[in-house]
Image (cartoon, rainbow, N blue to C red; front, side, top):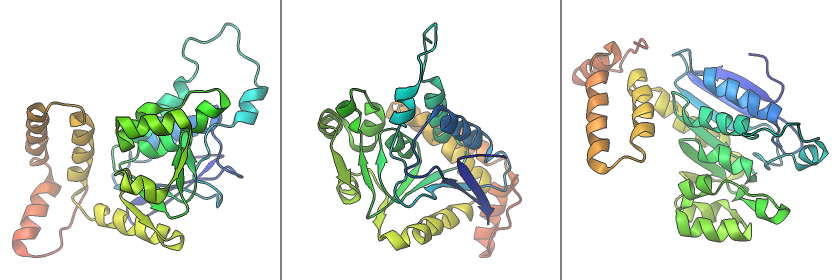
Length: 258
């Protein structure tokens, strides 16, 4: 896959997608188009069991929209009825990626950058990372729904209305992050989690991801019934049988991706 703004490396069933648009990985429609293509296709091959989403730029994970580019754009005529569709579709591609996506946040994740992080399954942050929706300070609106997904409605409103940026430790205390680690431990920690997941039964992980996305907003009883249905589906996969056989025989499983 040819990309201008991202590097993709596959190793040991883990695909690492690195955002590389210096100086701060600002977002444009062209960037969103690449995100949509990458996360819609990166896990088509069952050899990929986990995706790590990180930054190749030292200064930031993603500082949000490229306001300089936006300010120089001439509004199209006629005005589109859904001007930001590409941004939304890119985010949903991350959310709906068929395998778990781990965000390795090395620095500021602001505005649209926070949105990208919020669509991931697991968030590991460097102690240098910061988070926020500063759009209100420049006459725009951000993604309150993404921030609410991370920290709940009332803390979201305070950060949203003030446009305040908070540290990784503050976000961790609000329950938004899986881990906060020393900056030089970010890659190794994220890789450790990815490797642990990649060792699990491949169809189990994929069906778990699909199931979790489906039950997210369901009532409790409906959610559990849906999970039971997914468990029944999983039992028909050869790798599921292999996992149980390996457990009984006290040996490592030999998964075939089927």
